[in-house]
Every structure is written in C-alpha cells, then in structure tokens.
Length: 214
Ligand code: AP5
Ligand code: MG
Image: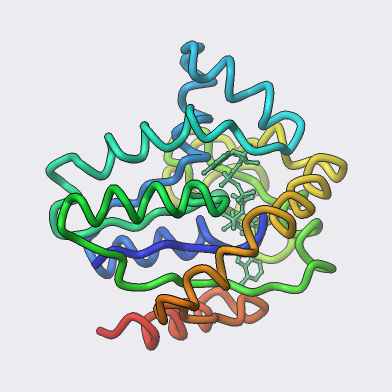
C-alpha cells in the first residue's frame, strides 16, 4: 500500500503514522524527521534545511525531491510506504507522480486529516517528543504518566525548535497557501479520503482503517 498523509501542522500526521505503519507493516517516511536527523548530525543538508525550518518555510524542492526518490527506491519500500509531510506543493506532487509512473506503480490513497485552524497552534505548542524513541505526546491532550519522561522508553522529552507560536502560525499559513491545493490535485485522481482529525486519537485511527481497509 502506497499512502500519503496530508494535513496541516499539528493535524496528527505523526501520531497516526505510528499506528498505521504498525498495522500495515510499511515504512514511515517523514521528510521533517529526515531533516531534523540531519540537523542533529550537523550535515550540509541539515544546515541548509534549518535556515528554512526555523522560519516555518518549506525547504527548497531541489533538496527534498531527490532524497524522497532515493528513499522510496529502497528495498523496504517494494510493497509500499507511507509518506508524512511529502509532497508539500504541486511541484513535489508532480515529481512524485512522474517517479512512480516510471517505476510502474502509483499511489493508493491520500489520507487527508482535517482539523480546524483554531486548535492547531495549541496542538503544536503543547507537543512533546521523546529524545530517544521519537514518541509524540501532548502536555494536555496526550500527557505522559510522569511529566517530561517518555511512557514508552523512559527517556527525556523535548520540544521541537519550530513549535513556538510565531513559527507554527507561519507554518499554518504556508500549509494553506502551498500544501492545501494538493487536496484538489489528488481529488482529480479520485484517491482522497477525508478524515476528521478533531476526535480522540483512537477514533481518528479507526476512521483511517475504515478508509484504507483491513
Ligand atoms: P513536519 O515535520 O512535516 O511538520 P508539520 O507538517 O508542520 O507537521 P507536524 O509534525 O507539526 O504535525 P503532525 O501532523 O505530525 O502532528 P502530531 O501527530 O505530531 O515539517 C517540519 C518542517 O520541515 C516544515 O515546516 C518544513 O520547513 C520542512 N519540511 C518537511 N517536509 C518538507 C517538504 N516535503 N518540503 C519542504 N519542506 C519540508 O500531533 C501534534 C500534537 O497534537 C501532538 O502533541 C499530539 O500528541 C497531539 N494530537 C495528535 N492527535 C490528536 C488528537 N486527535 N487529539 C488531541 N491531540 C492530538
Ligand atoms: Mg509530524
């Protein structure tokens, strides 16, 4: 199964991705996570990506499309993959379609998680992520048993550099201007499943499974 998770910052893409990859046994490919790993490791790609991410802007396509094409050509993606945070504009979507058609495959479903703009900032600003295993929590909506400590592995939690109110607002605007038009783009292919993301995490997941099939 070849899936794209679409939705604004804080919609719950990463949260649902963890459940989806477990159920469907496909790799989770998050361009945001790949960039953050490169920033942590101090690579050239990380240095360039950070300039844009800190401002809430999209990293240029020439730094992004090639790395996704490389990743989905790897062996573990033969039977499918789930892209989280890619594509993010029409040009990226066109490049992905071109790559997949040359490889003789196509996308199966776009999971479009919809959440009203008014609750997105609170979701992102209250997010906490495990420094070790990457599990995602929220100080209010999905708290850990012990404050600041990961329920899954016991490591410390941290906050993403771009999860402050100003940068989140910019990211939401960039989503509306550049990424949301992808819903129309994929609707023309008839593969979009709209999911209400303003429900309990478990209910959102149940709706996604309904859309994807068992
Ligand atoms: P990226 O890492 O992709 O971030 P994003 O799209 O802004 O999305 P988030 O990760 O913030 O939100 P999410 O939907 O995953 O929400 P989550 O599940 O964590 O991109 C970051 C940056 O990298 C971009 O700004 C850009 O600069 C760059 N970049 C990445 N890809 C790129 C590309 N293709 N091209 C160019 N640039 C690119 O949930 C959020 C919080 O809400 C959590 O605390 C969670 O616990 C809570 N929550 C989740 N679901 C629920 C629920 N149902 N009810 C209550 N709380 C919930
Ligand atoms: Mg995410």
